[in-house]
Image (cartoon, rainbow, N blue to C red; front, top):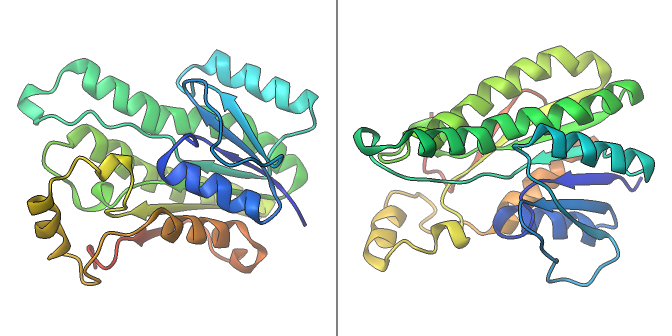
Length: 237
């Protein structure tokens, strides 16, 4: 069964990989970015949408448009996220507010409008993209780590609320993945990080996409409320 997938933050990085992965499997993918963009892959399955997920008015207008076009998703991938790294004592209010607004409140805004459709249909998959930083912390990322850690509680609580409606809610926590977000790391620092990863390398975006795809499938129908790390063994409990 081909489904409609909604992926926030799909213009680059992990979100872009997730969107293209689902499209290659034949699903219709609605991919968003705050700025106007086009997918670098030609496919009638990939639909780019300019959307500021921090604006509730924009999100509601997007929902209205998709409903009119009969494009309401059964799978929601909350991937959009930003960083604004700074040591806590130097962190500006705006650096805290901007990160929390996108990484946490943006997830609330999108989930709030789409979940009613899922509840009505008694089916849905919600997959939040967190970060290993939200599980283990990272100096200079009090704002980012806080926003991603909050997704763990969001995921568990919502999973308990909507499980009876055949809706699963899960959390994927990537570690160091080869994307634009990690491209600024210099060679020496990268080698230092790799030495802490049991598998001895950074991951690639497809490592995350494949897990997200699995969690959206019927094969994962009995998995909910979980946070699953994709980090090469960086963090082990």
